Amino acid sequence: MHSKKDFYRLIAAKHEIDMYLRSMVWYYTKKTTGTAKRCNSIDVVGYPTDDFIILRLDGDKLNEITIPMNYIHERDNTVHATMLSVADVYDGPIAGIAEYNGEKVWYLWHKNAPLSELRIFKLYKLSDEEIAYEESDHQEFRDYTKNEVVATLDETFINRAYQDKKVDNDE
Image (cartoon, rainbow, N blue to C red):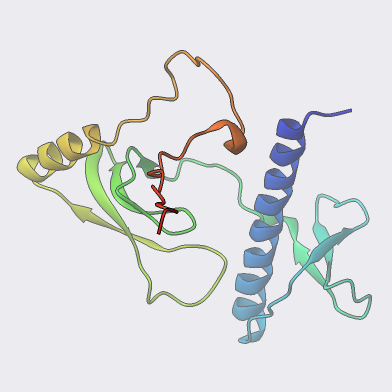
């Protein structure tokens, strides 16, 4: 039996793969037919070959799509950005400092990008002063989870420090 932590990791991994497949279908159908297909669920039909993969959309056997395997990206020598800090979040990081081409830049979610499962980020140059400011500001919100754990409690064992109300029942 897996632990809850392992179970949640597996669920998170499945969610990431599903998001990747949905975005792949969206971009592939838009590129090949001019109209992007959207779906809630994707099943891989059979074992993928070296040439293609067949995906079934929303559990409908009549709604299957064949995508060339060379369309699935693999890591290559493309330069990628690495998020170094997070300054704002909304169901995931939306702004902060990243490293791109050996330089620190500001990344910001581009909200007006076409609707898809993938977030689009714009990267902006930063001056040395702006980098210093953002890094010092980030220090105020440090993550202390690498420190020694002293206890693990569920919420029923945490006093939320609400003030006790004094009630005068003598009236």
